[in-house]
Length: 176
Image (cartoon, rainbow, N blue to C red):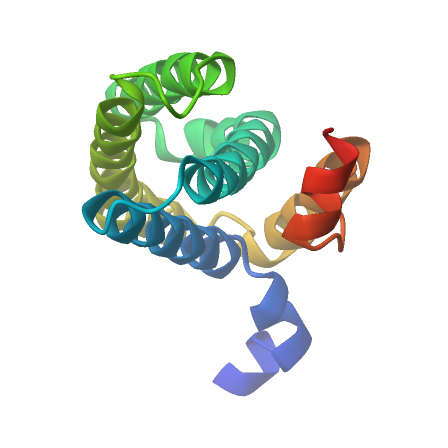
């Protein structure tokens, strides 16, 4: 069998590592968008809209990882320290997300909280991409099957939260 036979185009799209890495890139862009708004003294409404997107993306990503990806990788790589650190990082991020969701954008610590969350996420992403993902590949985790399951779960979570395929303006109108 050739190498291309192992990775058809459809499987590559559903590859867990590719899917998670793409999510990482999307969130990084959202944090950059927020930083630009903060630097340029963007409106509180604009900042809040970006933060809402960040929080939603991170919540969905973390829940899918915790339910599907982490258990599969933990079993395969036998590196409890790395996996435990990822769990603690998720808990820390969830704590800051909860604070942001309860905080008005006018709050004096709003921008700082978003910045610290972004720094935490940067560290976490680096750990996953530089350590966890290579170990998962080496351990021959079925990243194609896991990716399909992750993709499906993420779509379910978006639908549960009423976020599937809705533009930001529609979400804002619903939250009023």
